[in-house]
View 1 (tube, rainbow, N blue to C red):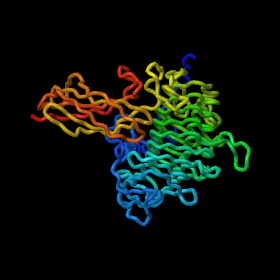
View 2 (cartoon, rainbow, N blue to C red):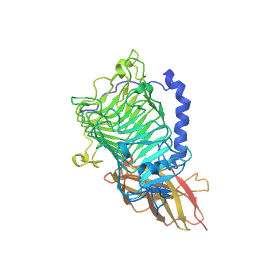
View 3 (cartoon, rainbow, N blue to C red):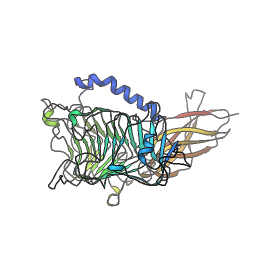
View 4 (cartoon, rainbow, N blue to C red):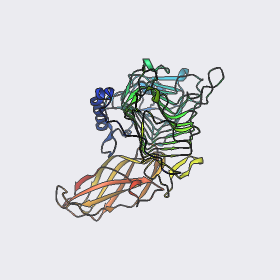
Length: 487
């Protein structure tokens, strides 16, 4: 099918009063998140490297009367969470953690400069079985590397994971809830009018799947009420490098009043609707404005790829786009949309088969022949450093997040003409290697044959393992660092 035509022009950033009022807040928030968490990451601010050094532990064989050390771990998720302080890293060992009463309320977090972390210990298989609610006190918190399973929950309108706190990151988690919404941001039991506005939410490298079954409490049908992720009242959220698949209603829903969201490089596959962008038609709860959807694969929806539900009714006359932009996405396998009021759809979007490597078996990597290379989930490099420098070689390491794929990576180095690197020579690369994982993995490579007593630059390069190194669109690059070899 041919490329879809362009659908409008984005509205300038200062065209909406609500956006003008919040511009400084959004910029400050994004910069703050970037400085606190992104390290040397080159790209959109908000990447959240996961702290790797554990300071507290829990294990099914532990005891909540213990100190929480490696030798004497706590027993429950609740006790570990209650022990968090700014900068603390609580690690869970292999096992299933089920909260008393089925719901765990988190009330403690960190600070922007020292976020707290709850994560699976390295190589551990951790399942949290129950409902997880992050109350407002659980701000500046990272939750990483776990299975968040709402399977055993009773049916209700409440989501399986509910976020009411600012500056929360979910990284590398596997989330499912077969009877309800999986993740809701800015929700108080689906009562958006009384919910707080959530700031600085980051959702990266997760898989959200099989959320909802469409059955209403007591029987009957509840169409359109069970989604993968539901941003209801948020500002400045980042949703990136995730897989949303086989959810009963929408894979991603922004409704109502979800503003300034970055939705980049996700796979949204086999949902009823891929992405819903909505506003309150009565004008009470607000509209979703200033959201960007870029380089996503929105495929195989049973209804429609993009649904501007109520946004068209809430939009002012003359087809205002509200600053919402769909740009450089690949869409396939369903109708694209039935209305474009409330957003613009540029002619950089493609309606083509993305050529997944093995979609029926859960392999959403792209084949080398894909017309959508550079879109969908991709590896990211969230921190880098040079560790050992000799006269003729450098060994460097980095945090690589493969985002549910096999990632190929290497280090490259080039010689500078002077101490300020005003001119540089060609790149010399290390051998390639592969990494598999869902949360930050520390990788290291060495480049030899360097010139003693000279300034050099270095950079990390990563890509999906199936993609060709010859295609620049397939590559993820770190920022460039520099070092000097000794005499």
